[in-house]
Length: 412
Ligand SMILES: [Zn+2]
Image: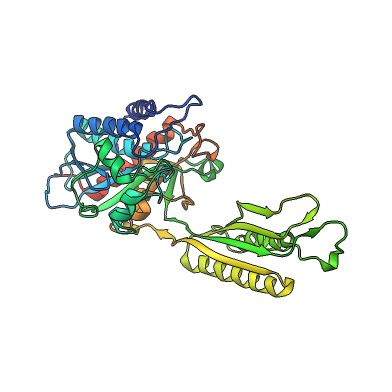
């Protein structure tokens, strides 16, 4: 069966057809969650699913599952999917590739008349991007119980429209209770959204885990004063103290390679004037790693450094943790299915830990899950110039096909 291949051209054509809905001038896509364009995109994918003989169900948060029957009606379905909503300046591949790769797997099985033991399903989750409604990964989050349906329904966009109203308006407020839909195993193909595969010249990323992250807001308070008359020894310069913490954030990440990450991405200086010693600095801290133990060590080291700096400088320093997502190791059965398929198909590959969030993280809380990465041009995503090679997308879809067949089993 390993000689079985998907149709790369058909996959590419479907990607381009879906990308035409909400296409931007710069070659990207703008299809925000639960807008008219999202409805149009969803309707097209559902139409394709029905044309491929799939049975469609929609749950109360608008997650869509499209089922291809297996020989054994009692077997739990092997599910693949991702999302079809995009960022305001999004690309053609983020999310959409994972959904259409699943559809292409089904079309291939149909063409060859292959029946699986377990059912095969293609899913798309509501509002993965989180740019119109917060929180991100909303559909999969409700599905796995990370937060409630009521919380998700109550989320509003900048115009005050709620998720529930918009789901109803676009016709995707379904009946099924989220989470009631059984999943035997879950696979998600995705562009890497980073530069690692391209840099190493590999075709397939086997994803053993998604990094955990810890976010903080830090405020250093000193005293603003005139830059001329105030001698160096008598200053309470908040920015100078803040920069030592910022440097330490990066140093901590460097102490825990290869997956340690430390970023200060947002800084506000008050009063932000050329000839005033800064009186207050607010900044963000983003720490990541692949194991909970290492992430916790980084957290402790950062707090200890802040405590020492507070003592030495005499300035008030507050640090508040504002977000925490634990690292998500994927299930060995799924990771191994991806690795085995990749090896059998003869694609160059390497392990790539995901630094970005995906629906698969939440799916992994309710079922064995795994991911397949393919390179994207220059590692760029969440951008209209996001790009990926047809042969890479085809390879990732072939790996998906064989990993799913391995889990679903072929009916004799
Ligand atoms: Zn995505």
